[in-house]
Image 1 (cartoon, rainbow, N blue to C red):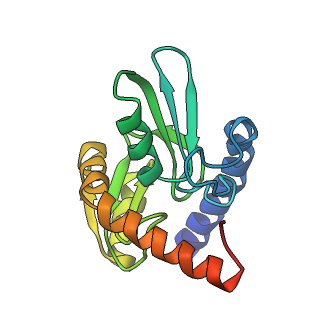
Image 2: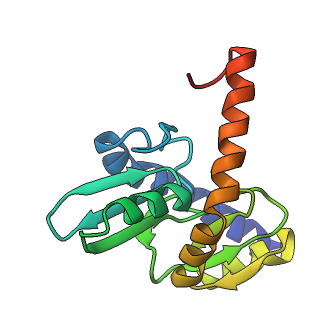
Image 3: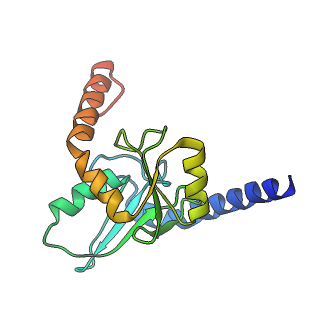
Length: 169
């Protein structure tokens, strides 16, 4: 029992600390460069890429990062960071433990792709929600493979929101 309470306390403290760490990159890029979504609201999936020419792009998700990497084919990414699903702190996307799929829909995608700094938390997520442990390369490949269907889903959702007067123009 004590161990469970301790784990909850640690997760809470990491979450609060993550919000503080998150603020700097979110201040520089408060909304996604591609879809306009609030990167604070999606701090647990936000991404930040720093290219070899020093430019940085902030996105809300792996889906939007994949768009940026495809558009900027002649730039080389030096650093790709992702929000840890638990702490919301930016972590190295290539060293993260990724979970693909499971019962929770992702951000800008039907098939969730979640990053964790700690393998234990990734495995806990899989036990609770399903999915498969993956590398960054596998998560990127999954993002590109679902790009057409995800883009179609987003387009249809925005069309409905526009008709209801609640969404993007």
